[in-house]
Length: 166
Picture: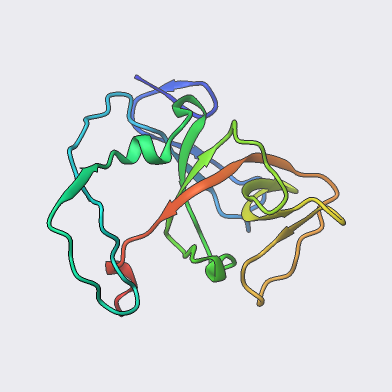
């Protein structure tokens, strides 16, 4: 059995939340696995230059557990896939997986999952001078919601580099 983001127990690892409007994409929430297996993945102490190559270090600093790095409140955390390209300037692309923390305080500038007029969206939160949801793609308009419900703060996101090779 598995407890979903809405508190129901179900088999499987996803919860399907239908959009309220027919033109809105559905939100598919991916839950954390309850029985995590700890994998010992090497974490190198030296950095990897994205500019000019640097000499490689011959030692491993420690092991890196992505659960420990990315998930601070497992009971309040869920995964969800991004859909669309309104956040590309942030580096968030269509199909990327976002890690969302429902217990994280949504502050000015945070990347949030919000429900606006019955539709789910991921945007940068602007609290002042006026409430707004900012896309990270100039081709999309700023949203000035009369009301919104925040579904959580995006704390991490990742994508496959293989999907970007075209």
